[in-house]
Structures are given as structure tokens and as C-alpha cells.
Length: 302
Image (tube, rainbow, N blue to C red; front, side, top):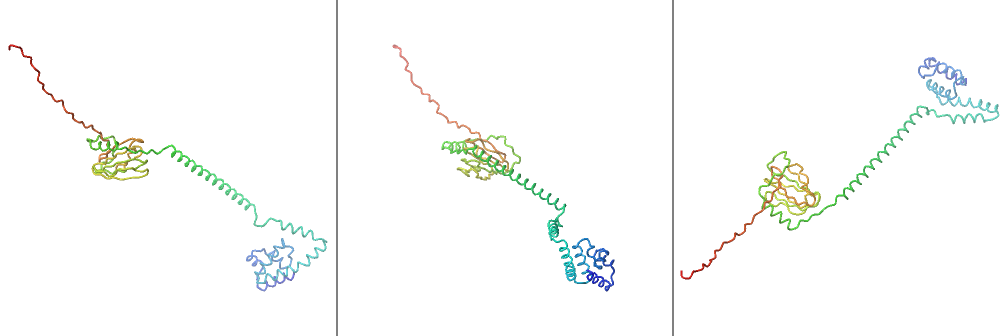
């Protein structure tokens, strides 16, 4: 020990340094550095600190710290053996070693324990909240699916096939109509043309006339849409008023009627109108007056 301390002191003096200057550089108190130079390693707080101070001080002075540490360990070995022989047992050393092994790691502290506890709590809360959110979303989707299925079941699709008599009635009404009577349809803007969108919400038979010419005649399936543009009028006839929706010049006119209702509507730039069918009177032949001769009785002698 004294040889190690002498090496440290002679090197420092050769460099022209004081203990105070060394203290300011390596942040080890000068009293502890003095103990190292005197070889009084047992006066240091612990053997671990003694090794650390010796390493730092030797490195500061330019001495190989590993060589000094080996010398320090070799000087400690005989003393340790004498201590074991004097005690006659190695159990205290084993107990001390066991205690050192069970000592709390230096990196473990109360702050780290608190932070770990808080982090674990946050993770648990987030997991619980995510599970609740997932459950609520799944429940909402299931409810929407059930409601959609219920609507699909409660709304049967009605299929209407017009008879030849209905078609003939439509043609006859078209030919025998006078000026249509306007119905109370809301008109926001009066345009010069008629832009009509026909949307089939249910399968329906439809006939469309644009400016007096037939543009479509047949069956529209659910979901189909047709656009018609007329300059004077667009006439629409359907045998299922509850299955046809009309949009006139960008305005939703709603459904034309109810399921299975025969509806005829006319749209002009002024708005939607319902034609009023008129009855065509067929003249009947007037009775023909025929004159018949009535015999006049003759009086004898006249």
C-alpha cells in the first residue's frame, strides 16, 4: 500500500502539482487524495471507492491505472487470507457476499418504482377504454344491421304490371286533355326549359312524353334513374305512384303517389300540373219525325 502511495506522491510532485489543483480537476477531495498517497486505503469509505479513486487519480497523473489496481489487489490478498484463518471459517465472508448480492441495484429507486406504477396504470386504463369503445362500436353496427333487416322485411316490394286497358286509358287521356289544371307545386325559379329526373325507388311501369313525343315506355327497376329535357312540357305516366320519385329543375317533388296508384303528371316551365281529363261527348242521332196520313171519314152525300 505504501509503495502505491509513494508512486502517486512522487509523480504528482514531479509534475509540480498540488493536491488542491488535482482536486479541482478530478473532483476528489484533497484529503482523500492525501490518504491515497499515504497508502491509507482502509481509511476510505469502502474498497470500491478506494479502487475508483485510485483509478481516476492514476489516470490523471499519467500512470497506468490497471497496473496500480493489480498491485492494490495483490497487496490485499495476504491480508484477506490472514483474516479468514483468524476467524476459522468463511461463513461470515459468504454471508457478506450473500448480502451484497441481494442488495438493491443502484439503478432502482423510489422514483423509478412510482413512474413504473403510473405507466402501468395508464396502460390498464387505455386498454379498458379501448375495449369499451370497441364494444360500443360493435353494438352500434349490430343494431344498425338489425334495423336495416327489419326495414327490408317490413317494406315488401310491390310489382305492378299495367294492363292493356290502363295503357289505352293513358293514351286516351293524353289525346283528350284540355289545358291542364295547375296543382300547388312550389316553384322557386321559372326556367325556359323543363329538366325532369325520374328515379325508380320500386319497380314500376313508366311512360314519358317530351314535347308530345314518346321518350320512354317500359318498366324501370328499383334504383334506375332517367333524365329528360323538354322545351315546353314533359308528361309522365306511371302505374305505381309510390315507386317513382321526381326531381323537377333541381327541386325534389317527392313520390308521385302511393303504391299501385295510377298517376299522370305534366311539367312545364311554370311547374308541375295534373291534367284534368275531359269527357268526349258522342252525339246521338235525333229522332226523325215521319208524317203519316190519317184517313178522313167521308160523309155520304157530300
